[in-house]
Length: 356
Ligand SMILES: [Zn+2]
Image 1 (cartoon, rainbow, N blue to C red):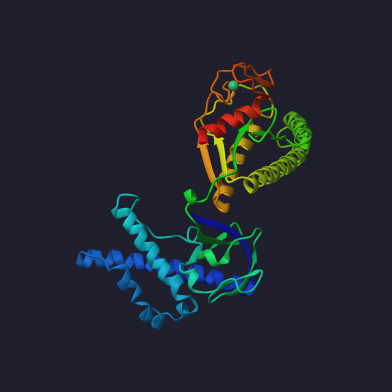
Image 2 (cartoon, rainbow, N blue to C red):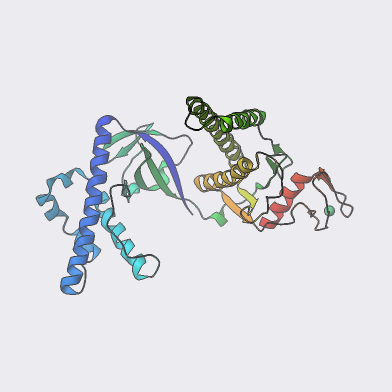
């Protein structure tokens, strides 16, 4: 199984300059190689192969000496990327390749990271031709397994995506499995019997936000006071959004750390409309994000993530019996097998069963 770890890196001013130059040179090479393929095809009826394009590097470096500052593997990867794009097109898997604009080509890759020791210095990653760059590795990973390093610029920050190959998913003995049910009263119920509650401060700040928004709607459009009220509401909204994000990250992280297989209901299909709570839309958004975070973290840590078919999980017992309950009934009591437990926890157990 292939897993990708993403870490934040902190280049110095000088290194960042080099990173930007590398990105630009890679993009130009990609576009030039693309153009060469098109021209050749028009003139001779066939385009040059990836290998023949790679063989032109010595020529290229003579003509454009700035390419000497870029690692050869990185340049080869640009041409490989173009060739892959054409192969995908020929196989009907993607559209015809096109020129890459400045905003869409903000990365480069060392495709054979295992050939060199990139992690000799603790706290740093060695990027050939760039230097030792500070890396914020917020969790342990096995540097000897890293086979590929992708450097990426996104939203004003630099990242590395480290690709490692680990043993097949089936080869990992899955002992710790868990099912998760998300709901209204409890944020999430877990099949091990625990629950994650919505932090109390959400409700407080959400009430405050609703009050601010009501006040805002009463202010005259274009007035000074409206502007002020709007800033206030926006600030609080951002604060709540950040708190939620933080909560969701921590909650998903703690689950992914504990378990090897995580099962959730396929939420997009689940009908969650029937509720009368004010914070419905916020809660909905949170569930979706929570599931996304779980999935992403499973990928990152090499865990197994399963989405099971939804429906009926709150009306079924793990023994298979039908146990109908309306929303007011918080306990699940099965007359067939005698199981008595919190209704949401039982739903989570049913979800886990569906994953097995
Ligand atoms: Zn039962």
